[in-house]
Length: 80
Image (tube, rainbow, N blue to C red; front, side, top):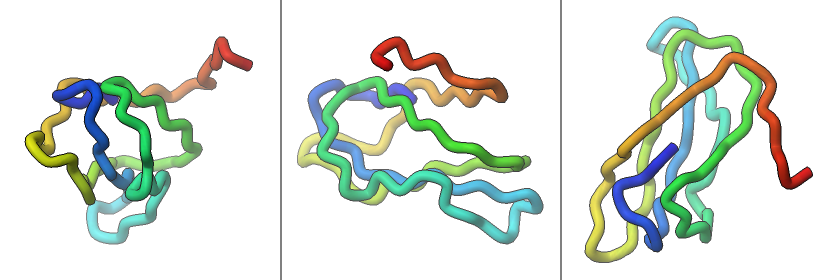
């Protein structure tokens, strides 16, 4: 996910649903302290719908996502 601004904290949650009515939280980053513009979140799910809910923002910025990509394959983490 790439946020609008770099250097700002965005609290958020990613939820999934197979039917668009019942939702399950896949990743809860509401208390994150990260200020990186690009953030990678790994989760395992079989789903049809995804939603991102912004739960907190730094002063002076707004909830705007530049890019949100989801891949159905294993993620390679070069730092490991």
